Image: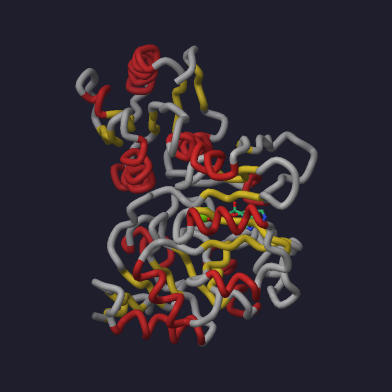
Amino acid sequence: MVKTSAKGTKIFTALSSDAPEINAAAQLIRAGELVAFPTETVYGLGAHALQADAVAKIFAAKGRPADNPLIVHIYDLSQLQSLAADIPAEAMLLAQHFWPGPLTLIFSKKPGVPDITTGGLETVAVRLPAHSIALALLRQAGVPVAAPSANLSGRPSPTTAAHVLADLDGRISAILDGGPCTVGVESTVLDIRFGEPKLLRPGGVTPEQISAVLKRPCHLVHWQPENSDAPPSPGLKYIHYAPRAPLYLLTGVPEKQLEKLQQLQQTFQAEGKRVGLLISRESAAKIAGEEVIILGSRNHPAQLAARLFAALRSFDAKQVDVIIAEGYSKTGVGLAVMNRLQKAAGSRVINVGGDE
Ligand code: AMP
Ligand code: MG
């Protein structure tokens, strides 16, 4: 099924990986056009990764800074040879374990990969996604596809076609609607070219899982904006995932978080503000508010991840003046959830003491 929005973006609906709409979307990619498509993590905004003019359209449509490199998506390991100048044995091991899946690996790049795709870096980020419609699209396009998240730069990543349309209607040729994404946070970005494995962005594959395969530790790289050095991954220095209202993030012992949350809520309400609460199922039984979104159970981080970006976007529609969000444990995919919440909060993080 194909519709065209009033602003001229085609909306292809694909109910399965053999839908004919996928071929129409693949033809657009081959022709140098932009197509948003579903992956297991979030919707990506795809373009022919080896055509500089096509990739330039991604940066223009998103308003993305030119030095923030893109992840190149492939459907088969054999395509990696055309992108990576060198494939370390450990990278191969991880690819065998986690591909198709939410893991992006950094390689030194081959000359055929345009500078615009890699933000001028000598390295290229590559991922083989685990989504049947994404894989069918990539196979039918037959070329590597550069695809950042399909949102306007700085906004929460899209986990449905409607989110993509809200940001990019009229700015891109087409959206392939394959339903909501299941993982909900982006891929893990890992650099294992030299020394200790460097986790550049936590995501759908956890450091615990990576360590278990490599049989050595894997740590998140810490980089603060006030550092004078260049960040190890350019994306680290940009604003991310921001809903329209300022978001305050609480961290620390859950019971103390709840006390602080209620205090803050009262203060903001006394100032006449409309307050949004982003809370766990456990806390929802104990507090009330005007606009409450229950993210999921503290004990089920995959559920928190799957709902996070949609929740941040729905506060925009509710027109709240301020959002207060609870923090969660950083174990497993909780690390990625907290990373995204921290970025959405910017400097508005309040630690109430203790670990969680
Ligand atoms: P997004 O496309 O929005 O999911 O963002 C892609 C992320 O991957 C950004 O944080 C980039 O900085 C990071 N990335 C892409 N390519 C590289 C690379 N060659 N080296 C380090 N980080 C990269
Ligand atoms: Mg993004």
